[in-house]
Amino acid sequence: MAERNKAAEKAIKPLSGKTAIVTGASSGIGRATALTLALAGAAVVLNARRKDRLVKVASDIQKQGGNALTVVGDAGRFSDIDRLLEQALKWKEGGRKYDIVIANAGRGLAGGTLSSDNSQWEEVYQTNVLGASYLMRAAAEYFIKRKKGDIVAVGSVVGRNISPFSAFYGSSKFAIGAIAEGLRQEVCKCGVRVSLVMPGIVKSEFQKVAGYDEENFYRGIAHMGKLLGPQAIADGICWLLTQPPHVNVSEIIIRPTGQNYP
Ligand SMILES: NC(=O)c1ccc[n+]([C@@H]2O[C@H](COP(=O)([O-])OP(=O)(O)OC[C@H]3O[C@@H](n4cnc5c(N)ncnc54)[C@H](OP(=O)(O)O)[C@@H]3O)[C@@H](O)[C@H]2O)c1
Image 1 (cartoon, rainbow, N blue to C red):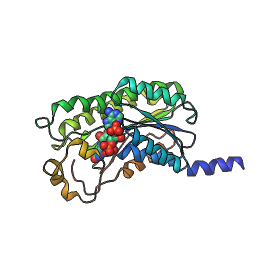
Image 2: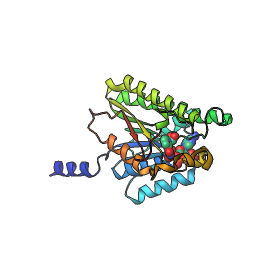
Image 3: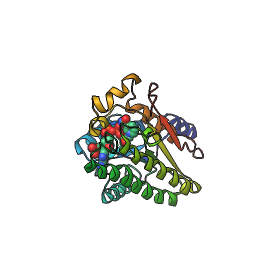
Image 4: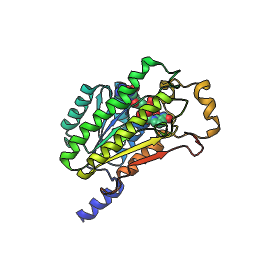
């Protein structure tokens, strides 16, 4: 009977007993992923810079019966990432361990190399590449010791096909895609999975932060029809995390159906 109950719980909440860390959890894809993983049974550690937004996401997770811990910090600052991982390992409700790391925090930047603002180049690379890589490496070292664990990097379709709308930003996503695949090759023998999720255009705060306007973005995508919401990406992430341990979905691209390019 106990065995049957366990199997039933596993079917409804396939991530129960697991703890997931999600960076960039205050908005968009990260928020949707945190809520979705919590619904699937995971205890979730939420990171972003805006405290009020994180507290609201945690309260939404608690309202749906889940467990959440908020750790405010900058995902591009190494000392903040160390603190995030330390807090996760101290969190009683999370079992004082973590099983899943979603390196999602990031920002866009409108324009190509000629037109983008060089004062923002550093921030783009610090968050999207250096911070994400630092987090992924720290998680990989921990997971190797445990002989299991999941690392998911949120890349982009512009990290596969560069786009004139956002070429400099796209280069950061090429970099994180390469780093994720290289890391996968290093850790796969230890039972650790690394996945790269490449979203197409998702409506979120991303466009505003990147500086997209009618001229440099919306006119060029007007023919693409209905764009994605963050939930489409969250569902993809949850799906790949709930595959059997010997199955590593190492890359997925999720685009709006009408997105022909990139
Ligand atoms: N939307 C798209 O079309 C699209 C397409 C492809 C890939 N992506 C990628 O998807 C990821 C999430 O984007 P989104 O669409 O969900 O955008 P969003 O709504 O703007 O959310 C970005 C999240 O990242 C956090 N963040 C940004 N910089 C941070 C930093 N230095 N430290 C900590 N948190 C930081 C933000 O939180 P705070 O501001 O509170 O810190 C926010 O929670 C990004 O990596 C983005 O490049 C997005």
